[in-house]
Length: 204
Image (cartoon, rainbow, N blue to C red):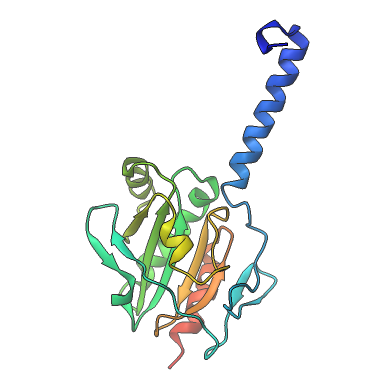
């Protein structure tokens, strides 16, 4: 029986099921792994109770190539930022948790600018740049974002198990040698974001 021929009550039930399925899919695609963190792919992460995983100095993995075009059409290579602590935030304009954490990232990035910390966004799963550019303008994001609509940088720019396209937003912090020192697979507030950065600034 087609939906159009189904009794009204059945049509309502089927419509409700469809809406629930769509909502579940949307949630799984935006922070679906947000409660999880832990080791994987030889990253040597140790997880704490705050949803942040860290790797001890000397046990940190290197990233792959993280380079390409930014949302404003410039070229950026994360390798050029070696010598500074680098915060890499994977986000999308379609992602509600990304909107929740954006003001915290904007604030911390502005306050730590010129203090040995660089922020780089990894904009993913936005089929065109315009919504992402509007997102950055709305939240006053002061740092560049690499445009990664198909998630290639997220999938291939990090050791296996570090990030997932089903876990957006995600944040990785690189130490001054460009190694992966901390990771979170959930939206961050200012306190948690700073807790990932500040210990690395103190490292020699």
